Length: 286
Image (cartoon, rainbow, N blue to C red; front, side, top):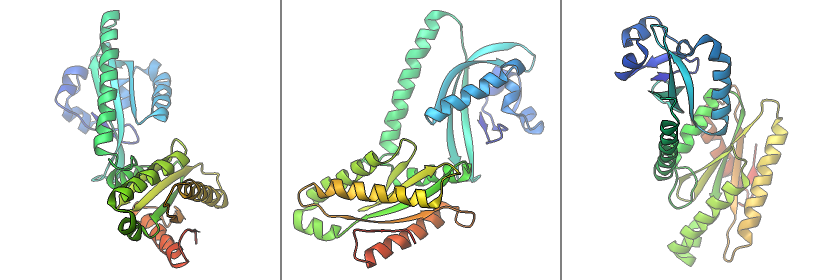
């Protein structure tokens, strides 16, 4: 089943009634909450466990108790993942539960399957969310993840637009193989400068982007200083390689009037263009 950010169930599959006793019509007509499926005495611990698991990774996988419509309680294995629903323009969580036995042998089997599932998830992410050349997120994945953070509204968001200077000339001089190797180096270096929760993406060709997430208390000055640090470090590392060229960068911080990905992208791109017009190899923030 799928829940919204307030834990309201917005859709269920055919197996939901068999497991819980609640029909799709009951869920819809009663505006049923996901929390109703958790025994009342378990809810505080359950919510804490959900927050702990999702803080470490986009997916959560753990065991908990579930109360059925008739009042009986069963143990279930639960896998949840967060995603952005572009149709609803809102964050959603998909939750898959299966009836679980408390026997040790089945727990071991479940652990094996869980590890397999995690490996499959990583493989799928690498295949569909990661740019095969540079290792950073693809443009759709980067946009989706940034939009989710903007919609979530729990952090201040800064978007960096990054472009390789004179890349056409670089390709013409050293060849496309060397050009691809340099783009791969840019992606690896950019990723290495970011904190764990920040993300980088390849927007196309020699254009990259990064989204940085800060606490609400951070000042704009501190955030722009962080952008300068990233700019300086990436360019310094690139300059140590033979036949290197530099990067130009533009940065913008989301606010109440500038709070969608497309708006941030447009403004950051204008500041990137300002860096290009100003002689390249520089960061523009205003």
